[in-house]
Length: 208
Image (tube, rainbow, N blue to C red; front, side, top):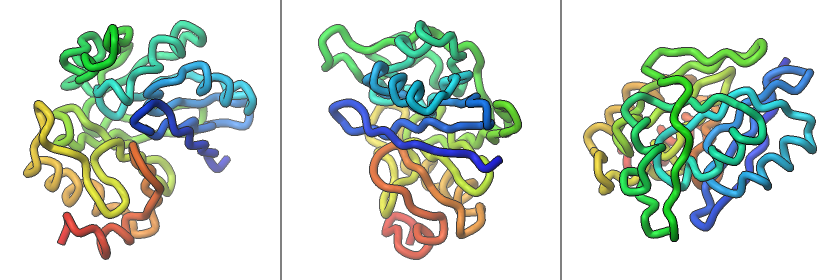
């Protein structure tokens, strides 16, 4: 089947969370449940989705804030790149100390690396290591789409001024991994509207 994707905008920094249906019977993953776990689960329930995995594209607080609630309610496994795994457990490391009480998550159930695959029913996601926004930032390629977290946005790129960020690394990640995908590949970023690889090759001012 063709995957079905629903975008939810969550939290006070308006991060994108994606529900991805992987099979007709409702097996699904949630990518970057950054906040509002009840809202995310309500949307999943409305569509009859059974969440198997929680996949974090990186460890910042605005992308992991719903992990705990969703895992407690569904038992879904938490997946994150090994270089960002420590951020799940530390509000200081995930930059959420400005929120009263901070944000933390249960630890990862599986640590990801470049080239790994994540299988949900008949759907396979390929993990691209795309460091630069954080050391453990990843992008997820599946079918004709790619989820880029805070690496690539429409006409922009992720911030690199946070601890562990690198402008050199993020540009290398985008050019070496993401821009090699077919031009028609739809890009679902961590913030803002969708775009395509072809559009970003033509119009992203950071990639000139």
